[in-house]
Image 1: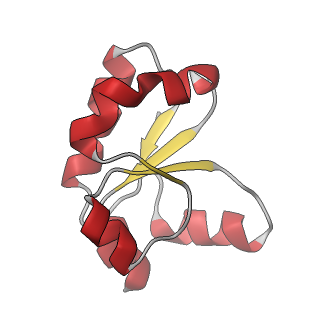
Image 2: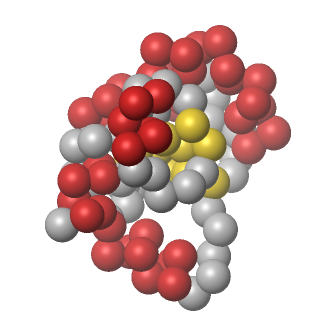
Length: 97
């Protein structure tokens, strides 16, 4: 599945869509600013898979600060059988840009 751009995500949110967004940043980063969604720090992802189990075939958008940690999260989720994981290109930095 292709990654998602900030422009595409913002357009979809503006239309009232509610995609499943997973923020894989650390707690302090999430507290500082977030765009909503589920907060599961990357290091906790293996232990929190059950929270996502019902969404194995749903679109899941993962994001972090710049896109690197969320790329790791995307790869991990795909290895666990999730079929529609998309990384937010550029992360929250691009989102704020």
